[in-house]
Length: 58
Image (cartoon, rainbow, N blue to C red):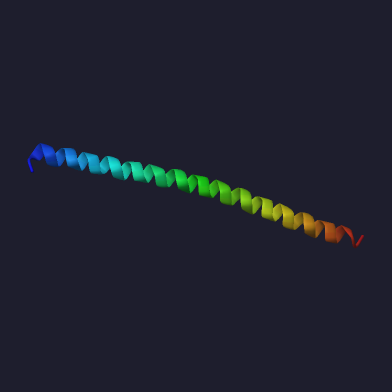
């Protein structure tokens, strides 16, 4: 394999790795956003239930 072929192949490999990294970053952001929203709604549901129980004592 000549120098130019090796250079082109290395560039293509770096482009594939970069594309995969970009995809992982996007997936991570989507997952983090989903998890945050899910946790927030779970806490809101939990605290509204607790406040309803507590208000029943007054």
